[in-house]
Image (cartoon, rainbow, N blue to C red; front, side):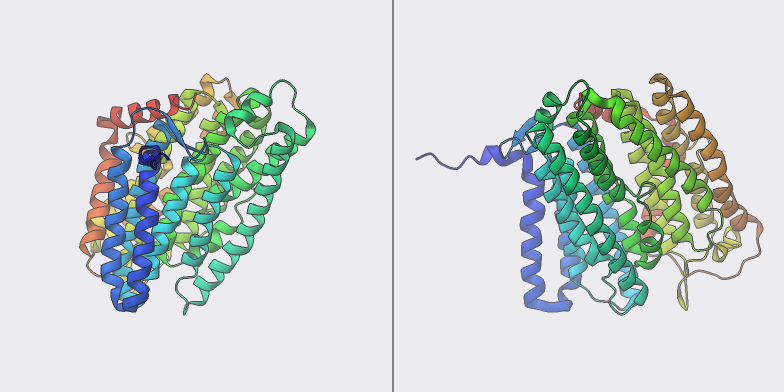
Length: 478
């Protein structure tokens, strides 16, 4: 009788840390109740940090576990670090919010840890079953997080909408996965790639469309974006910040992995789908955000537009295209968390405000917040020399190298339209008369705003570390 091979589980050590830690936190919460919230918050943050250390110290080569269902490679390592970073910062940003709202929910931090565990599993999924398990673990936790503020009608409504539409998208994904399995005879991505060559059967194309439809919902790409504005607006602000960062990274990661690893021989088929949803997302995000008064709703449409730009890189289907997606994701997470830290800082004596017009005259009442918010808006608009410019430059360059000239041109046009509502916010901050004075920022929000601002402003001076890491991660897929 042989002993248990613990070394075989080493690729999944970060997930084991998170899952085991979450069970321990549930036990502490069940015994001590809501008064355990500060302790659980600290332990949950430590768990995410510990999982990040385990990712950094992970294997240096590509390895698989659980009979090939779970894969560890450079792609997974890069995106897991990004996911854990986004989840940790979003969690830390939430502490002051819940204190002000006088809501004590020890479950919140545990659900963030469980959702992050699901995201990590998604990123390392190497077959359709592992993909679905990770997706559902993430989604079930996110449904509850959206409705965590039980006394708030908008939060409850957001959770219900997300649940109903999420269940629909999961059904579409499962149906597509069953068709792909039926026509290829395997659920493993490598097996699918070997069996799906030449001119694929019409049934397999249907399966591919349904799988991509399910994934498009998770990244909130048009036409499966309908939940995003309502959930972003209705959910508590720190929850929206979490939704806009870590889950977006994980969903885009599995989108890229399944396209590149499972269907490399029929890229001309799925490229048509990706190009369509990319163009639709870029233009809907650009035009629909123009009339928005609520800043969280505006950020939802901005998120839809940014997903469109990321998909430009995926449409290229090349190592350079995947590299551009990874660079865009890294910069997008920093921009999003910095922006939401400022939105969380929009608090006066009567509570948090969410209207764009409440930023009026911010340059006179809080020059620090005004400067960083303006830099974030310029960066999201893609204005050089800020980080957002480089993000868009890389994806458009990848599209041009793949001879997708029309897609690149349309992307630039959408970016020009989108710049209007970003620059409008800068105008309100610097040229309108002050309406209100915000309370002093707590330390954690100040730190996030300062660090994200520095990264966005000075990224152009040292782009190599992120670009090289993204390049190595992209090459590990091919």
